[in-house]
Image (spheres, one colour):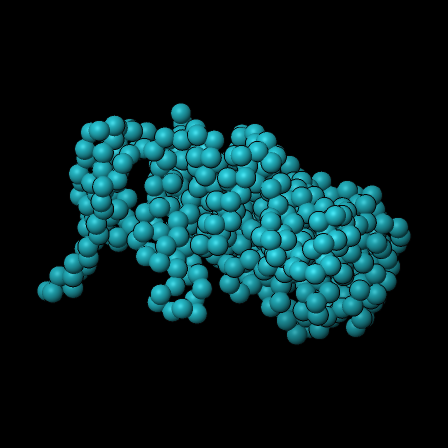
Length: 522
């Protein structure tokens, strides 16, 4: 089999990715990630396992109401249970009730699992795969079959492993995906077995790899060279144990190195990588290929000298191809193209090398040095751009704000109270509000002060609040980054604040949220 001209990208960040340590999303987070993936141009977005938890239930309900530009939403589940009719299996019913156009289900390829995990016969295992595929296909869905532990099963008993794939094909599955579930297979083995399957089946073949031996991406590429036409993976390689195939490395390798059409908007790659990290409240990997902050950095000596004359002398691609930027560490020069691209996305045309672009870049560097991150805080970034373009008018002049927490000795109940003193166009406002915590109280007091002047603020609600400690080695003296997500019921946006004082950081993010919304509304 030869390398296909195009490959479909199947993202499982919201399901397989969240099974890894350190990544968790709320229902709203999952929708935001899915919307970014759709904008990025992936073909499939696996939302989770319907019915397994309330967050996934909420996600599929919301996803069914939204219009998706390029991606198909997929629900994930398993075959019917042994010795049970497929139409009577409640887990299979939940897959249909998710109302997704695509259903992905997995089955057992390895005899070890058939005997020791399912505790059934090989014939019944094949029937479970075939019946489930046929039933789901009969309900008008696109059906993807994930052959769990295929490579281990093939090495154990090729005939048995292949028979399970034929069962999926007989049931009407649209594609069979070979899974290296334990992540222990080497690229040459993946290439040979994938070629064998592609030559034997009459339906397309995909690949799903894990990174337990550090070759998850290499295995996916090897499978594509052997004829696989779908690659499953996660943004930034999140996933169980050491993670899944990293799509932020695989996608540019396919498109830029192998000439395979992937459909994704490659210049958005760095943005979506950082967006998922920020929304998941995780630190970026600075050394990540293509999207890491040091992926195109140079420091000292002949490297800097050569790069300043000819960038490709020490860079395998132009950084802005993937939305990243070159960094000359010795002179602190970082890419202006990233700023220009982001500003353009927000509707602001900046002249490359112009005064506004230089000012924004300088402020960005100063703020990022102070601990700010803007990938999931587009509201704060747009305010930064507007201020540089002189198209910004403050909502109000702040005189003071104050927060207190009182603990009642008898009930042990704690009350947070906030006061805000400000003026709008010379008119003073002094308000007090109580809340469940200091940020909630500040939010209430600020709204009381501003809504008489800006009634549309009543439409804005704070929907998420994340706190990250910066430079944690300094202990309680560490800086705090606060990321706030707000919504008017139609759109959502993020804002950020940084300070040694968590209240101050929260205040900055809160004010940015209100200002961004009102400026956007004109």
